[in-house]
Image (cartoon, rainbow, N blue to C red; front, side):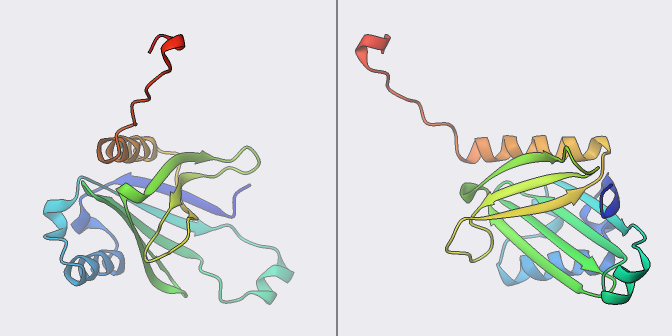
Amino acid sequence: MSEFNRTTRECPVNQLHPEVFQALKNYFQEKDLGDLETEAVLCCETVSTKNRAGGLFSLLSPSVDTTIHTGVLLTSEWLIWARSGDTSGTMLSAASLKNISVNTYKSMFVNDTGLEIVGYIGDSKLVIRGYVGMGPEPATQKFCDEVKQAITRVNPPQKRNLPKWLGG
């Protein structure tokens, strides 16, 4: 069983949870990325609700978020995600589509799905792996497919020249 129950929906950017929407709006202004709503190609929101933990775990970690709102935004050049937890506050991460690869994640061991991101996230100088938890709804698969296609458009696969003996 997953640590969270998640539900994901496709939505316009302005219908995201207020803290998530404000974080995205601030980021667009700070980075001079244009108008948030105009640049959005696709947007999803996931609400993650923490499953009830056992008594000892609850006593040892009382400040764990019980509800997390995550907004994931795809533009023609960026993948940006912001999360707002009821105790942890709001955090935002972004990655240029030129610098990442993605996979749809589905665990074989727990009931969890999402988008796995590998590459240069934020200002990282090293390749890192990120994960955005999403629900099992069709909006998740649609979003993941769109992100993969957008990355392919930005980074088309390199054509390989085969040696002559292989028909090249």
